[in-house]
Length: 262
Image (cartoon, rainbow, N blue to C red; front, top):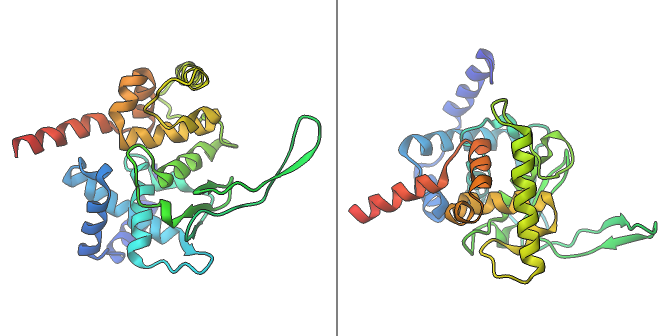
């Protein structure tokens, strides 16, 4: 919780960092996952985005020029995760690097036999412990429901607040560590079994890669296609709801009702 001086400083930043109204509206329109936000939530998201853009450096790589609209699209998606948390959940690092398309990092790892390998797989995103978030601009604007590279990588950043990403972010004081571990272990085990059995799933199969990827992929689905998570793993949905302090499924239901009423 921010103290009085920090709150005053943040309000000063927000007051001086006004966003272009038309640009902000275009950003909201481009992101269907924000459709159900109330006017109050949109206002708080806007304030969080201003703080985020003040704290973070978003720069292009490999010749990519990022204009204000491109930066805003990234910031809005990153900040929806912490809408009801705090900007300090993104503490300890400052940089977002954006490539025009998928990038190919050279990552060294040692196998069980002690042999060193270099992984050169193309990636759409990457988050480094205490380091930058790296994104592919071609993948920043969500193309398929339930898949969102920005939410995925920033979920990793939340996971890394207490060390290496392992699917166990720092929980709030009113949350049970035992319940989180039991629910996530059960859901991860079930999902991995279904992938091994080549069953059809509505959640990105990449979630079976590791507990860290399970948390990141399920966070994507939680915000973008929440009903998918709620139907498949209701106890897991409840844990994500308590962690993010948001209920996207309920928000989407209200939005759909309003649309039906007209």
